[in-house]
Amino acid sequence: MPADQTDGTAGAHAVGATGHDGPAPTAATSGAATGSTGATATLAPGEGTEFRDRATVALADVPRVPGSKKPDPILVADGVVRRFGGLTAVDVQHVEIQRHAITALIGPNGAGKTTLFNLLTGFDRPDEGSWTFDGQTLSKVAAHKVARRGMVRTFQLTKALSRLTVIENMRLGAKKQRGEGILAALVKPLWAKEERENTARADDLLRRFKLDAKRADFAGSLSGGQRKLLEMARALMSEPQMVMLDEPMAGVNPALTQSLLGHVKDLREQGMTVLFVEHDMDMVRDISDWVIVMAQGTIVAEGPPDTVMADPAVIDAYLGGHHDEPLGDDDPLDEDHLHYRHEEDPAGTPPVDGHGATSTEGGTR
Ligand SMILES: Nc1ncnc2c1ncn2[C@@H]1O[C@H](COP(=O)(O)OP(=O)(O)O)[C@@H](O)[C@H]1O
Ligand SMILES: [Mg+2]
Image 1 (cartoon, rainbow, N blue to C red):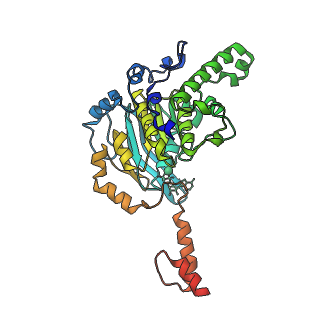
Image 2: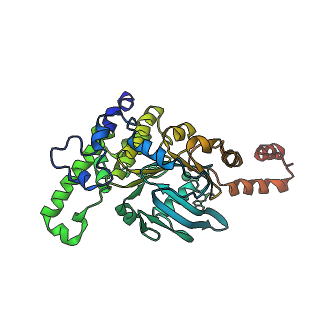
């Protein structure tokens, strides 16, 4: 995919810096996205370092311990607990996410990363706990309102609507859609203007993400990697302050990963805060300013990438988890495994680890 590999220059253009001959109203109203637009426009993707350098300095003195306080947190969570039956999927006492930085959330499969994302973004309800975003309480706020407040997320499994076209998917991500309101719907000039602005913003983003050629295609016809790009582009439609990406690189063709990486770095250089889940440690090391490690629902370590990855608690967390399993969502539930084993055991199978099924089959023949 040569087009994707050369994605560089497009990714560097900030929204509103390209193609707009109008006043670029959407970009201008977003405090987060302004300021750096001129700086990034002349840089290759991921090359901008203004915010990276700032984040490095800001985080230099932060203690490398779970729950450590940050100098300028945009997200602060306390006592967040989520149980599924007898299982405590998330039990986070305290966590702070530094503004304008890229924070990686890592940990073995089943650690609770996706559940924490779901809770913080209003897609799930905690049993206990509260959190604030940009100083305002966000617990119990519904997902669509969370997005309006400036925090958007993407999903481990992409949620692009395959029966809608690429541009239609993008429009769904827009923050203001007053045309949907009963009154406004009657006042055509109101929503017509907004629709034009949303479309212009969508087209800017599609160009930036090299999806403009796919504009009229059904999202369902895109490759896995292109769908990830579409999801990220759609998330940016609402001009968020903070973007949460759940395994943005999983299942993405290697030719696209560099470009995706560049896009994530660009988000920071445009003044956004990024929290992302990723398994690839090289990638984590490359782009994150700070790393938070979860295991069995709790935060077990925090710190800059190099420090964290040398931490024995982190190595333990991974060795104790299911690190050999692929990145997918569909990791079999342990209970199912156990269940099968139990069924087989009474048949007299000796406790041969992991090969119970095969030996049972052999024995009954
Ligand atoms: N809806 C659910 N019902 C029951 N258990 C769940 C549900 N969602 C997640 N879990 C369990 O919670 C734990 C954490 O899952 P998850 O947050 O998906 O982990 P991660 O994203 O770190 O791999 C796992 O043991 C998982 O099986
Ligand atoms: Mg997950």
